[in-house]
Image (tube, rainbow, N blue to C red; front, top):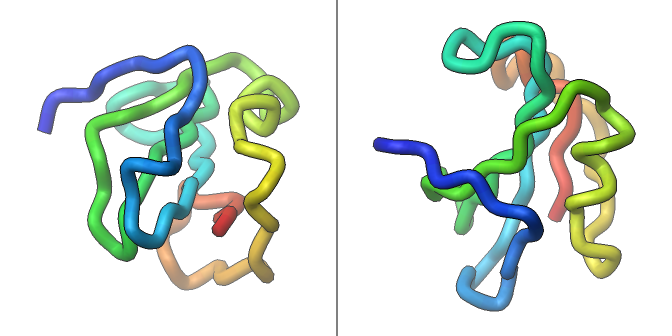
Length: 81
């Protein structure tokens, strides 16, 4: 899937929106990446920045941070739903 960089997320296009924030993924080393998911399916929509606080700014205010699940993937640091 080819990434589509966005300046903000439109979560209304998803039935059950989630945003997963990763640090230093293989396709964007030394960056933080927020990716929109619908249920457990990744979308192509990503927000890429240098800091965690910058990508958190892209998370819509109506989403809440979920408890950490460290066994998902080693680069995943936060999940919002």
